[in-house]
Image 1 (tube, rainbow, N blue to C red):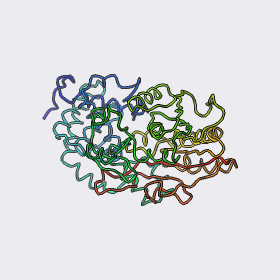
Image 2: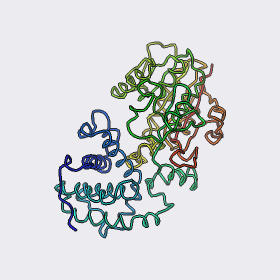
Image 3: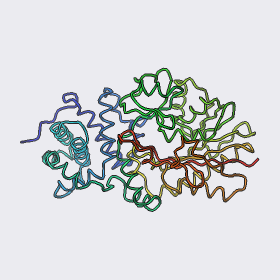
Image 4: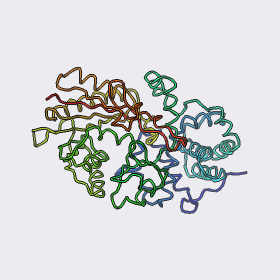
Length: 450
């Protein structure tokens, strides 16, 4: 059966979403562009503004599923291709990946997945010659793909090998595999609510986690959900909501939130009654923070500056400082599946130097007796435990204030032997895997000696 004739995106429902998804995947795999850069802000794909909400949601799910399952997709396709994926036509590669992802994991009819992938390559000058190949391979995937998935069961194929090795070395093989399995799940929607979590869990068809976060499986645009326009909640992973709480009762205190955007922690602190100064070097990200605070009807002073060099006008120091330092973000791969394929081991060394400078600078902005919480969303010890240990070894002005299980809803597994916070993606398991897990976070609480 010959492949179908190409039609323009306006003639074929769903083709525009798949074309943009293919562009974005090409951007990650061949141009090393992040998903955030391609999907939001000034660098966003120009075609996004023409997509209906439903197609935009489909596009995002296509991209996320493909990147989240990239290793397994490569494993399956390698067994269906005699000569491997064509290397001279990126669109042929992305069409095969998107088509197979739909067949294997998405609720898309096989014939539609095949048909639209063929149309993608037919529309590309370099890839058009592979239309027949894409058609044949994806038809085989529809017939044989489930068996090939069964063969790969239990293999952590979807984690970059260098990352998997690091996690095995640091956490042990069993935990590393549990982390990999958790990162393969599509993430839930986590919300920090201003008040009455049980009520919002009911209204949003979710449940309340032990930490107070409301977790739901609702997808699509959050702007249409109850409570969004009224500013009753904000999107924030359950693990990301923990570090700000480690500052304790912040009512009336002066708190600096360094590297603050997009503002989830700033919102927590402001809602808790703190006088917050939010600092971030990105004007665009700070604009997003301001928009969020306006919607939430919360107030914070905002400063666009490099936190490592920022000098506040008031030299008297802050009662508390939260440093959410830039990092490799390897703990967030389930939400940002491009991270594992864009980062390299060299990034860890370069970022750990920046993290140490930020932590040292933050210590100098504290009042005597003030509290400093340092955190990263990385699973790598060089960006968490080792940064803190190195800074503590270099100064006598700081001391660790251990975190107790009672401060994290009694979840003892989240607290390290020395009293730091370490969440793993496999923590907080649930009988429904879609409702389990956390982002990987590290946090330490320090005090400037009086």
